[in-house]
Image (cartoon, rainbow, N blue to C red):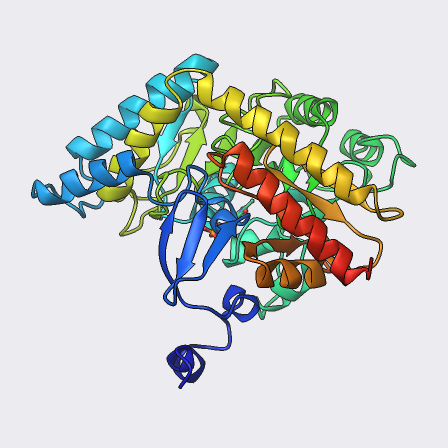
Length: 418
Ligand SMILES: *Cc1c(COP(=O)(O)O)cnc(C)c1O
């Protein structure tokens, strides 16, 4: 009898990733996950950007186990705890201060969409405006507010009601250079007869992780930030997937030199795969009433413990960031080599969030399936899953990276019959 019977029998049709990878995982270490029957997979997926420091980092495991064994408090709503103090202190010392950021830290519920919801709510409250602008092919989460700023039509339809008070505007290079950046937006915001209401905020991903690895250029992001400032529109950067080192710096917007009004973080924040999210808020915008955005799991002590340990281990100096940038250069070089074998295949993405778009829209799915058969977990991205998306742990070794690229090369050759 198949060991996956109970999942098919009992679990809702809504399950998704497990359909492509119908195995039962048992253990994991670093960049490798192992099924219950002992088959090893190299992980170029990393929990969609959760496992930035690899699976079960021994130092984080030790911090977590020590904490649990000590009898320390696990759940505490938003009460002060030793673990929360440690996390906030580490976050201030290793993330905010070195980057001259004076944002306040808000803990919403423990997932990315909770952070996005809090950002949208706060932007509307502070500005007194309802409208939010977001970008073509954006992904911001699956609750109603987040869906209203998300692009994907299948996901939007799941809402079952009209997603209102938002509009989509073209992301960088949506018109492939045919239209000047922000031409339309600048005009309509300056024109009191345009009929376009001044938005409360614009929410943006610097790299569209789910939307097809589209990358916003630093100059485009700076122009966006300037436009927001000129019209007193709040700029929200959703760094849930691209943040926490994924692009080679802690925040993905550092390269552009912009300072967002609000920042959303989650996925890799706890460093260990434990749910944790936060929303960074410029101090003058922190106009919440106590309890106005509440939740039972706002900050979870075990996640604070591993989160603080990860900050101390990886972010106390530049060494880790420099290594990530080296790995990223290797990844891009390897992807370019593969893409160069296929006409019109292009490498997309930034840092260790990169992939290949093939003109044959079904190719990425077939390559990912073939790679799975060869022991590599890799997913696809984009509105038609047309982009092969690699997202290894940031701690992956050079050797593992090359091995994964080798599998992708073979898988592509197999799919294209070469
Ligand atoms: C994953 C993701 C979210 C949603 O996070 P959840 O934890 O799944 O709610 C929001 N924004 C971006 C950019 C994401 O990648």
